[in-house]
Amino acid sequence: MNLKKTNDMKCPKCKGEFEAITFKDITIDRCTNCHGLWFDMLDKEDLLKLQGSESIDIGDEQVGMKYREMRDIDCPKCKLRMVPMVDKDQFHVKYESCTQCYGTFHDAGEFRDLKEHSVLERFSSMLKTLRTNLS
Image (cartoon, rainbow, N blue to C red; front, side):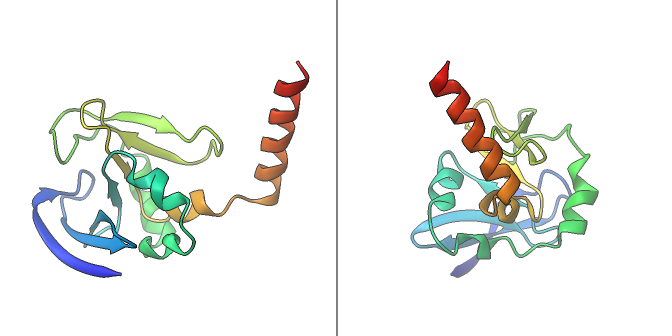
């Protein structure tokens, strides 16, 4: 994993600086203060498929919880108001998305959480798929 400071964007939650993190040729931005993660369009989806990519999320979940309620934030790239979102499979994972550049911001611990589906979440997803296919 490669680290490089980036000064052109600020964290939308704590206003800290971002550092560029590269994992298997995919580069995202991580806040040096709160450790929130900024994903450009489709980077999150690509990283979710890669084994070990949860290692980019080094932030403390308790810090992430502190910032989670902060919902009215602006995109660090476009400066437009971001839209609060809920993950389609894990309803407890909340994040913000930009409607212009399609980037997403996740608080510390949220990306790790996305990678770690619980047994109950997997079972629930399986039942949902089964119901849809039987309808």
